[in-house]
Amino acid sequence: MLDDSRNFALLRWLCIHARTRDETRSFLLLESRLGALQALGLLFLRDSAEVEVATSKGNCLTALASRLHPSSLPALDLLLSMIFLSARYRKPGISHPKPFADCAGFWIGQPLTEEERNRIVFLIDRAAPNRAIPMVGALADECPSREDVNAFHAWCVAQMKAQLPLKPACPQQQAIRVVVDDITLAQAAKSAWHQSGADTAAWYRNEILGSLDLWAANEPLLRVRDYRRWSKAVEGVLVALSFGIALAEVAPSTESREGFLRVIIPAMTEALLKMGPEIWHHFADSNDRLAKLTAFLGYYFDILGAEVNRLLSNLMMDDAVPGLWKLLLILQSASLTHNFASQVRSMVTAPSTPACHRDLSSIDMWAKRILQAAQNLAKAHEDLRGFLEGVMQSVNDWRDSFPPMIQ
Image (cartoon, rainbow, N blue to C red; front, side, top):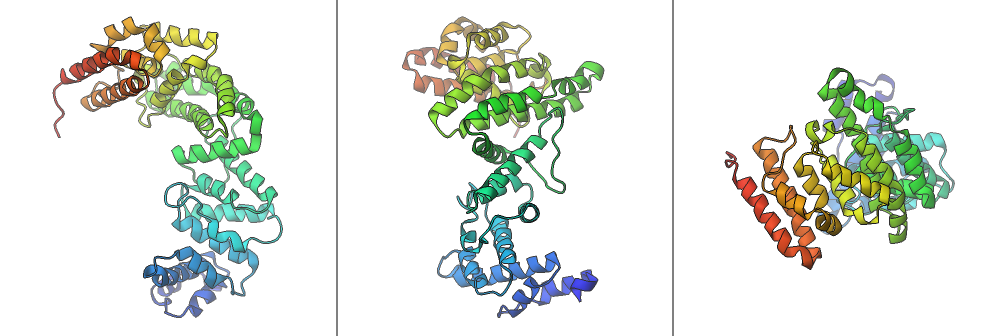
């Protein structure tokens, strides 16, 4: 009746009354043509398996897999069922290192069609809202078919590109929701390395940094001083640069990471400088992307080419850049700290602050950032410890010069 009528009242009645100790009704729901009923049957089965393993502290999805194996459902439906439940109840890299491990016995003996892969992606998005890229990447690691592995990784890269302000714009798959957090960036970066291998640095420089629509990002500020629209556009550019950081962090080897950095850091620096001095004063950086990028460039300063060293050195001598940003950059590198020691001494006593970061909570945030950078550098470089202890004392004195925050 529900397959034909899709009556909401009947669906509600089933949700309340269809659950029983035996699993006959659950398997009947799995045989429905309506996706909501199939999901309901799966959830009933999962609850039953959870009760079974509660005392033995076993794996709920493993117990559920043992229930589904003898089922007469088509092989593809069984695979989709396990993928849906695995995505629903496990988070890659958080609660489970291999969220789709229990799907191993359900893969069909041939590569999936494009339509079947799209169906799987849609199911994952519904089971794990906003986590489609991490989940699809984790699923790719479990696929027995090389064709499916490549296709799922390519999908992750394509959806990541769709989040970036590229010209021409890359389309996002309809009805898929993506939140660009650190987990999403890391998985998209792993997929990019899988897809491009040794050419990943050239791919990122040409297809991502080389295609960034920087004019569109600056236009709201240059034309009409629309800071809200400009901030949103700048965030998109910083997401693209953060993707580069993620690519460096998940590089398959130290050698590939160093080669990648030598290629992409000059291009990343140029893209950042093209955003103009306003970014240092008026961008709130609520997601800390600009702060992480600044620290990243400072940390790898020693492996940069002479031209990029010149650009960053000019940035640190630019009076238009607030002192707090300069300190964050300099205190990532021992060589920068040696080269600009006199500037650090003069800045740290009363550093100039960004126009959008002059409230007490922002002052506290900046004090913690500078102190953490100085502490990390002092631990790694004994010869700078005395100098950096003076820096930290000056930062604490600067912070104490403001009234305490009212809790």
